[in-house]
Image (cartoon, rainbow, N blue to C red; front, side, top):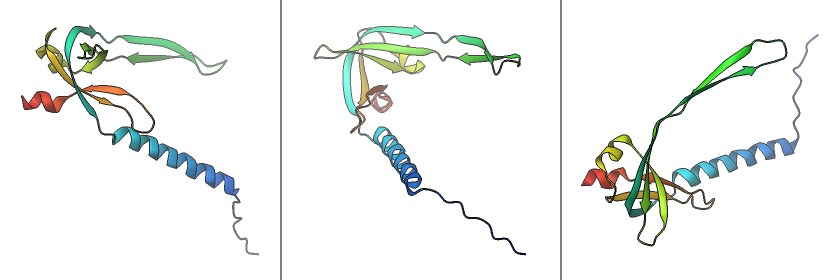
Length: 133
């Protein structure tokens, strides 16, 4: 007696949902990664160093298991507060070598990304303009 494998039947809405999730994911990634940045320039008002810190805690996986120790490490951050010509104030994350070479009152060039259609807004230090000097 020969047995044939049974076909798994899936509802068409399941495939439609999978395709919709894939399209939404690709759209968000494309919107964030390939949006053209706007270049800005402002005067550094203050510079802050925020040291990273280690945190740990216990986590119980069930009622009878031993607690598990979970640790996390936050990275050091260097933030420059920049005042634009129009009076707006922004906080820009910098890298260590940029942070060490700048002083309060210096001009900082940075990029802002608006995320095109989704409006996700973030800032980045502009390495290309700094390295060209």
